[in-house]
Length: 134
Image (cartoon, rainbow, N blue to C red; front, top):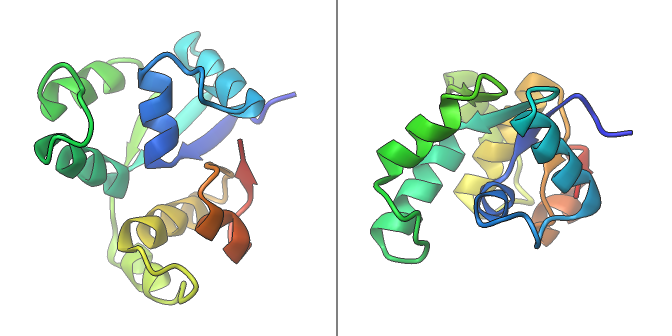
């Protein structure tokens, strides 16, 4: 049984947006449940920022501007943006095993919400600071 709510990492969201074939079983169920409005997926502000940067640099193709991509995503109430607060920035700064600032901020959001993080990122999984699902 899938969790009823989770936080998404950047690559998990992008894999979902491209059809979900690269997601793990739990991630596929969570995103499918969110599409059907049976689960909540929180999208940290750091994920929005990272996707925007990747699109701007041509590393990902959203097929539309990032603003429209996220407007479409957030039109489904099962996808909730999670704002970045000072406490999360301070928490991220204490996650010393995570050298990528996006990873640290995304993990801090999962800690803030006390929810699992949909990720297969080896650094995040290996740090064992948040519950991860894939």
